[in-house]
Image (tube, rainbow, N blue to C red):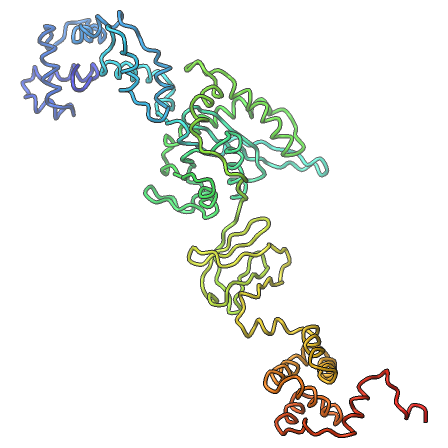
Length: 510
């Protein structure tokens, strides 16, 4: 066999240029072929007694028989491989043409040589639909897109008609097809279509091939396309890679283009006269038609999509995770000076160290996570209350955490442990203002005095301050600093009794 199997048109051109006196090098350059290939064809032509001009009425088939008499003569006697089976086997991982030729030739004498085997397979493959010539490996790629034809459903209450875009996913090796109607083409629905496709196929492919729609690809670039963060997050969760097609290169996703066309013809068109009153009802009807589509035998391969999927793709798919991916929305934000970020008009705290810095927010239906430089720094339950704050104590500076702990109950629990006079003083400090918080600082000051002077001295100081109607932090502090708390008197004892309202005293009966 020659190094390159040329078309009959090029062979004729070689013979014509030879008659014009061109060298082999010049003929090779003019025909864009190898110099050795030119020599080999000239030798074959000389052996067949052919020269330019060719005999009148010589057909291309007759020319081929003269140039390749050995191959043509023996071709009909040899056992022809099952090319559809060869085509199917080539889609399996690790299977090569060389391996299939070795299996075909094993134990036989009159077989095609490897080069003839490859050439004849290539001829057979040309008869298939152009999209079938791509040899997709089993479980390797899933092609996704939206169909051009939309469905619709009607609100039974208002009678309003809602459009329903149709998401389509097609496996590369088997052409196994999934389709569902969606409420919109937002990121949540786009990702939801992927999740449902993975569940339908029962596994995850190595690569997902979308087009460059803005829903999933924020920046279309051949070398480094930039994916929507939410879309990338889904791919990471399932351990698959997203490889968008080149811009304005429909052949890159010819598999799903054909899948979309098949879905439109065999799933959507048969349902065009039916009226649906919910998205669920529409998808139930589509599921029935989709099952029929995948079970229909493809004439050119003699098998259904379902059979090919079970033989090729399913064994090679990666297992699904235990739980399906929960769609998430990503958003960039800057933490405020109060170490909170806003999402959906609610404010969520972050560690105060990253205030005024840029963060990324990942929000699902139930949680809001905040990332800084790729590290998660906060996680909150999602709250649908605009204008309110969700603050975690560990995100606050130490001084702010102390203020957060300032509550009447906390101060009163502490005061009761110190003594009745301290308890009475704290109650008066908290209740004397229009709001309890106005007395928090004074009560906090008493706690500091207890740390410095001890519980007993603080109790005595508060007893003396109450006797002299000194209802303030400074009054208690001055008593302790001057040592007046150590002076005991009958009047102070009487004041202590007065602190208990259940003791009426002798004056009550006079």
